[in-house]
Amino acid sequence: MSPSGYPDYPTSLRLGVNIYTSRRDIVYWLGEEYWVEGEDLFNNSRHEENCTMEDDELQRIREEKLKEMENRILKKDQTGIPATVIPVDQGGWDQLIRENQFVVVDFWAEWCGPCRMVGPVIEELAMEFSGKVSFAKCNTDKNQRLAGNFGISAIPTIMLFANGQMVDRIIGAYPKDAIKARISRAFGV
Image (cartoon, rainbow, N blue to C red; front, side, top):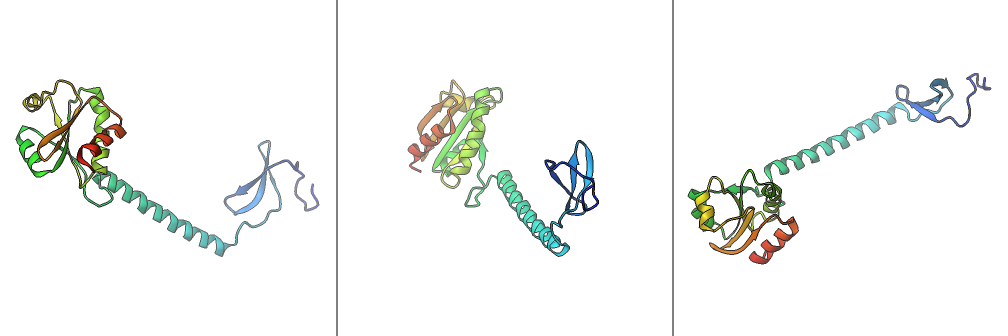
């Protein structure tokens, strides 16, 4: 026994924190508990103050995460304009080209593995270029005539249109940076 009346324990033992009393008063050694005199980690008023601060901080973090999720779901860029990749077919093609100065069209198919890799890149670029460049996707299986009009024989094929005229064509799956550079160079944005 120690002079304080508690059991003796080796000095190399680590102190644990008793979460019920908020005191450093349990020493664990070989699975046995030894009670030792400990100091109060905080008084009750400070504890309540800390909890309030922690609650406020948690609420702030929750609100930030919620905003991030909203932006991701709505795909909004920094300007607040929704950025989407518009599905296009033969019927909506002329309107898409006529109403937008700069258009990027991703020709793809569901069964195409490389197309599935390019799809998320196109969505990210739509967010980055939102308000400057319009992005569309055309399923070549469902729009064979439209794909045939542009001589598309391999997918993914990404076509860039400025003022209704094709200015560049990217055939195959390229990294995001390469596609972004081609878009910037073609449209000067």
